Amino acid sequence: MDASRAEEFEAYVRARTPALLRAAYLLTGDQHLAEDLVNDALIRTHQVWHRLWDGSPEAYTRKIMYHLQISWWRRRKRTPERLTDVPPEPGVNSYPVDEQARSVTRLALQDALSLLGARQRAVLVLRYFEDLSEAEVAELLGVTVGTVKSQSAKALARLRIIAPHLLDSPTSDRKLR
Amino acid sequence: MNDFFRAQLADLAAQAVPADLYPRVLTGSRRRSRRRTAAVLAAAVVLSGGFATTVLVGRSLPPPVTTPSGSAGPVTTPPTLSGSPSAEVSSEPVVDVRNASYDVPAIAVCAAGRRTFVDGTERDGPYNHLTVAEPSPPVRADLDGVPGDEMIVLVSCRVEGIFTRKQLLALTVADGTLRPLGLVLDSRTFDFFPWIDPALVSVRGDVVTVRIEGYGNDDGAARIAPEERGFAYRDGAFVQVSGPTARPSPLPAS
Picture 1: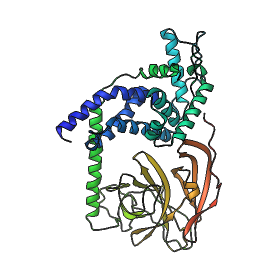
Picture 2 (picture 1 turned 135 degrees about the vertical axis):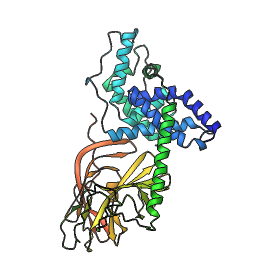
Picture 3 (picture 1 turned 45 degrees about the horizontal axis):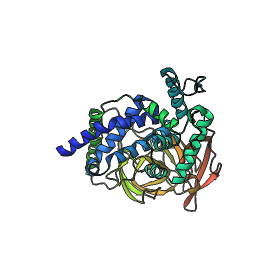
Picture 4 (picture 1 turned 90 degrees about the horizontal axis):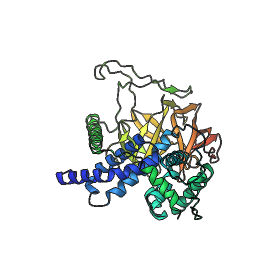
């Protein structure tokens, strides 16, 4: 890799790592696993940088990251440790208004996501965090749009059972579907 | 769309602590490149002896599992080495399927053809490449009724560098040359991408028994109640002869 491409890669890594880490954190629920995931995806990106750098390297990195996460999950064949079977209930006022309530909600969401399969979690993160369309999610994960729809529906249904307060704001009657 | 859930996801994602991964990425990438270079060099050394099919002698391998059969040849017991391989060469050759060239049938998106493996990975392989490993302990038995034992190896087609589709391949060994006898898993079993644990492959008589504990498909992966399926070589191909034949149902998610 020549100097200019090396500089491009360094700039790319430094610019995009924070965003990649945020998505990876949602996928893994753990800071260290998130760093490992992004690190591995970036290593693979570096290996093919010579044919990516003038294209869309971030799309490639994200694709690798999401696929790696599913692959790791299969290999580990386990879910992260959970301290309780039931996520914490929200307070009397369901909408979190202070930091303590927000922390409880974050923990509940983290726990609820950990109960989903890797692909379901990936679909939710891509749809509702990355704001991708169903077609874009399908392309990125290498599955059909139908699979994305079914995985998304299953994941949301599961979340509604596990922690219904996480999906629907009491201040809104618009439901996720 | 309800923004409440999005806001909570964003709030959770914001818990990720920023980190400078650039030095780590560079180190990891260089290590990966070095490993690749070392594998190519090793291949050059191995193949410089002029063997298209590499029969390595004196490699320390665990003793193979053999099953008694009337037509089977003598049990091959690899030598145990403590010093350098070149210093102590056994007179009994041991075929190392991880460092050899042989034909492999088509597996998933990995096309059929002659493949050269170096340390278990295809040398200069295509993007969707094959890896090969022996069950531990190695499985050897007479599977086709022809004098001489066959060996079972686990072949994985690595798809897009991420997913793997695993098959079991039976190989015959004649004069140090490896030839494929056939893929062990029938299409119905292979089609649901069973998880194959190399430690749970065995041979009883001439039946290769595989324990399956899960599978993967386009909807993700699923664990199943463990099941054993047996496959035997009949009329030129492996067919399932024991165990359930239907696609297994996934266990309820925890």
